[in-house]
Length: 186
Image 1 (tube, one colour):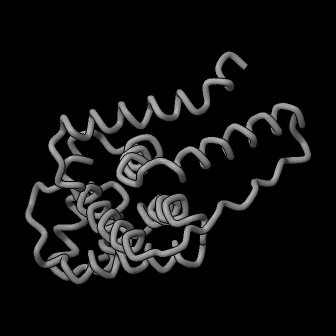
Image 2 (cartoon, rainbow, N blue to C red):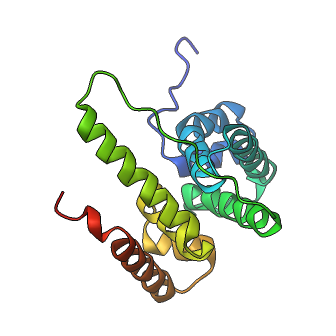
């Protein structure tokens, strides 16, 4: 073959089918597509510990790689990936005895300092609210609003009914709105 086949145009599901048949290049493409966002998910959920997040991200992909032979055609690969991530995170947090507190964000020099300070305060306040929120609500918030997963995907990942996911997301948003109401109309 003169020109190697580009895998970038294939869907996640097509890549996973190839990976299940032994294509390491296809699995590498999946890794390249999802590793950064997945590590961001772990970073936010695990107290902003970058090293721990990297370890969990790699562990998630190792588990996906080990299970690649069990992939069933038509199943959502991204949902499968986040199911693994969700379970790793849930188990770690269950076993965790201490909570790691967020570090402060740096404020950019080139931007409007007052806006940056307000934005940083808001994000710090949001992180504080999320860290004090019951973990099931905070996890669902992260999966939906930060990882942009749909309610059906979250229901599949968490093995909760869609109605429960919607209800908990609504409750999480109400908690956030109540705790951050002084930021409204700023």
